[in-house]
Amino acid sequence: MPDQLTETFAALADPTRRAIIDRLSKGAASVSDVAEPFLAEMSLPAVTKHLKVLERAGLISKSVDAQRRICQLNPDGFKASLQFLDQYRQLWEESLDRLDVYIQSVMAERKKSTSKKKKKASHGREKRSK
Amino acid sequence: MPDQLTETFAALADPTRRAIIDRLSKGAASVSDVAEPFLAEMSLPAVTKHLKVLERAGLISKSVDAQRRICQLNPDGFKASLQFLDQYRQLWEESLDRLDVYIQSVMAERKKSTSKKKKKASHGREKRSK
DNA sequence: GAGTTAAATAACTAGGTGGTTATATAGGAG
DNA sequence: CTCCTATATAACCACCTAGTTATTTAACTC
Image 1 (cartoon, each protein chain N blue to C red):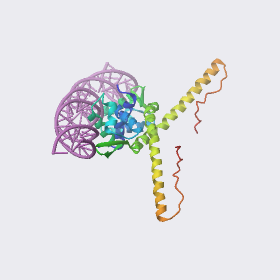
Image 2: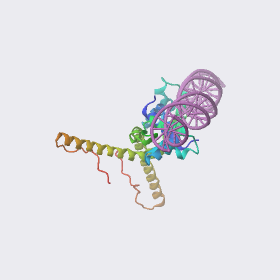
Image 3: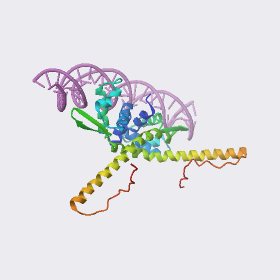
Image 4: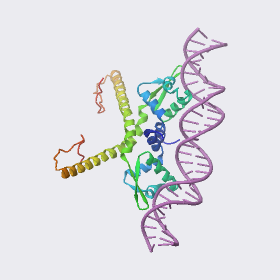
């Protein structure tokens, strides 16, 4: 049994499962309802398996309604992966800052070589402290 | 060749690779430097393979310094997966709202049954429209 | 050039994944 | 009880993955 993050990311690493998640984000649905859009590409047991993977990863949960199994997203299951990636969001935003700086230096060069005076483009981003 | 999201999530679905990412988030490093903490558990070619997976997923990039290959995080590579999960962050926060509502209803019950009057706890969250 | 260091590649293997078809379980409808 | 519907399970298969050891490539050092 791998850890939570491994299981979650593995579950997300499949387009069918991401499509299922997308479907369920619009509301709970029975297994057949979830499967319906995929039945041209794959069998129902294949979908059942995908649902099982999502369930084991904690991304969905099922409840019983007679013979039907109603699937719904378990928002809490996204928490860990979201937090993991958030660590690197910062990094990504900083790289945009560096891009800003780069663009500004290029602009400065352009201004010098063409002798045209233009206001700098702020790209709608605030200056970061330090 | 699978799509971007599939490749990214698959790359993240391995604890060794996540540890490598964590290491590189603290600064660029050569292949040997990256590998060093893992050499008790696995061989160097195994680490090389992990780095290749991360590179193909666009999460890291390598530059050449003599015999060394310097690895560094490619923050842009996190963009798509971050955006994907952000769709469900909202959902998660809404589920917290529902929890708030639930807690408030429980509180209301408590208040009724105990006849004690208390101010509602806002949990620092804004009321959502509709 | 000879030896050394850094990394990649090749060839192989065990176990996992994503699909299949066929069969089983279980609840509702007649 | 019988049949139908909804889902799960079993058994199987092709391919992929994560690791191994052995070999190769390439650049620096003497």
